[in-house]
Length: 255
Ligand SMILES: Nc1ncnc2c1ncn2[C@@H]1O[C@H](COP(=O)(O)OP(=O)(O)OP(=O)(O)O)[C@@H](O)[C@H]1O
Image 1: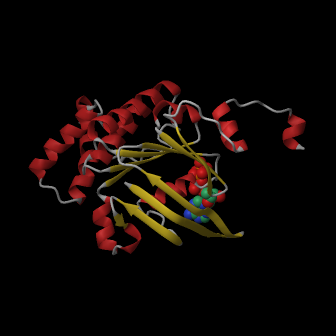
Image 2: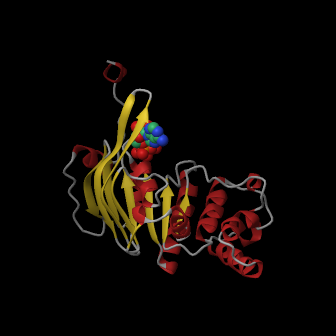
């Protein structure tokens, strides 16, 4: 469903060029829930944003559903992006619109007629269990509910792919469970391919079929989590799978 072939991205910064992603190739299958894990600054978000060309790679190709997005015109790309939903750590809901209106927004952009919009909005809110909150404003919702509205909004145009950038990093562990359950359900019921950026191995273990571990802009290891015996080779993957954070002595940290 998604094929990244040798994609790279360098940003210009005041301190000089910064290579955020270096020659990454990845294949993500139809219906996969695929994790991208790594420490802060590893390049996970940049790689995710290259899948819908929110970041355009300097090199390499991005193929989604058989089509190389890097070859499309701006107008064609805008159209294709409708089939790639996205959610973010801080939800990005429009605070002056109700839940209903937030989910309506992408449908209006896609010029869906009003009568069809109503049905679709209700379907999406039903899917995330928030139909009863249709008239509420985001400020009245919990973090988990806000993220589920964001999921409903991302589903509005019936995407084939859902990109999730740290979807549970702003919420408590219990709420994390409810957001991941919603994602799992839409993957199973609707067959949507999901890519999740996270720095939490618990999230990966709870929901992902496969994971790529990133460090310094590169994918250092990939795992199929359905395999019985996973033996990480790289130090970072070993650390992440071990999933224990030990506080080091202050002298060691500040030395
Ligand atoms: N638009 C930008 N301009 C300049 N530098 C950027 C830009 N976006 C990302 N970077 C830099 O690229 C590197 C990779 O960032 P990225 O956000 O992809 O990492 P990440 O693994 O998602 O980390 P985090 O979890 O902290 O977001 C970082 O050093 C970051 O500061």
